Amino acid sequence: MSYRIGVLVLILSMVSAPASALAKEPVTKAKRPASQSRGYPAWAARTPDPRSPWTREQGWASRAKGKLLFGLKNTLFGWTEPFTRSYEAGKRNRRIVPGALGCLEGVGYGVIDTIGGAQHVLTFPVTRLDIPLPEGGVKLL
Image (cartoon, rainbow, N blue to C red):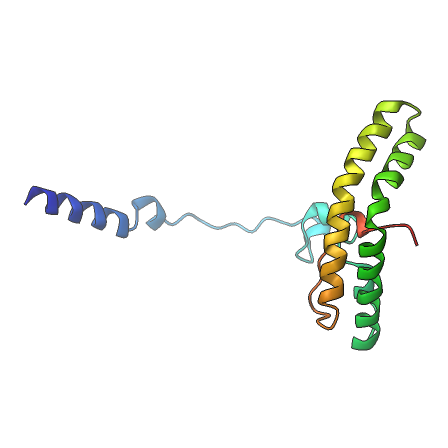
């Protein structure tokens, strides 16, 4: 009998609202910074647009064509990312370690760009669906 009472007390304590949630605190309106006045977080003003480039096109046909071409470019040329990342890292810093790390980073980006490009190709008729790729995908063409 005491087991049932214990379970009942546990269930009732989980269902009932705690006293701290019922306490009302005064709400004051704080003035938002200018970057947050439109509802965007402060860091959004500094970051580049994460959307794919084809999303800026007007009309369904041009967006679908842009999405298909973007997907084909990333699917076919995603394997070049280790080379381009290694070259860019070596160009910034003339040492072997950044170039090697850039190549390793490029392997990961290449796999993501290839798979993401295939997803763009498969879903090109659905232009509302955007799969953002890291740093905008392949920059080869």
